[in-house]
Amino acid sequence: MYSIFGIISGQNRPIGGPGNGEHACFPARVFVHPIATVTSRAPRDGEKVPFPTIDNIQTGLYSMVMGRTRETSEARQRILETADRLFYQEGIRAVGIDRIVAEAEVAKMSLYKHFASKDELILAVLKYREEAVLEFFRSAMEQHGKRLKNTLRAFFAALKDWFENPGFRGCAFQNAAVELADPSHAGTQFVLGHKRRFAEFLTGLVAEAVGPGATRLAPVVCLLVEGAIVTAVVQQTPEAADVARDAALKLVAEAKGP
Image 1 (spheres, helix red, strand yellow):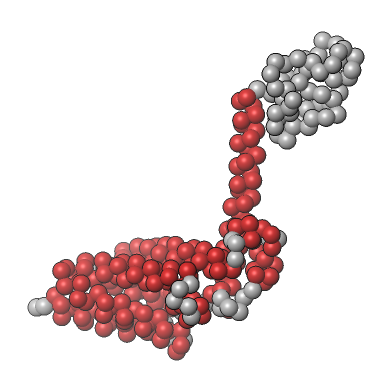
Image 2 (image 1 turned 60 degrees about the horizontal axis):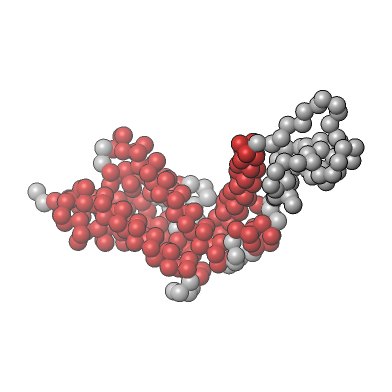
């Protein structure tokens, strides 16, 4: 009997007698190892045929599995990036699966291997987008913070950077909530969670500026930011970030007192 590696189970003994064209553990014309190629001819007199060790097999398996994992990860990443771009540019409902697989250059079977349905893909894209958004603000605020020395000002400067981007089409989470139009949809639920997490992030910035009064002031600043995003996309003006900044800083100054 052979194991999955084609190695004879039990003791290592020849299969058949001498002259049958086969060698112990490696039957001719039968076994081709998926990891290491094994000759199908019988060894010449005095020739030693290396027997694959467990270490070699494990190393080969690791390489094979990791190679497949990389291919799978790359395909999944292409699908996510493509779907994210198309959903943001053209809308979740306007873009179908066929369009995504064509532009991602993957088979439809590959997409459904990673995402059981379009709804599942939508949720994955929103999670992917959240990571990208947080990384953008972290990086942009770090750059602006060196000059402004104020985290709240740095945030609004980063917000304006986003508005000035040629591909800016509003907030992907606001857009998703409107397009899905279903409070029970997993994507809508994720949007609610994202907005809560974003509000907590802004609360932290306000708290840094005013201290304990942040609990009362932060919701107002959140509304200023959400309104600025809508205004920027509707009126096509990045200056909405400046208006929101000035209003927020005025509220902060009043909260801090003389």
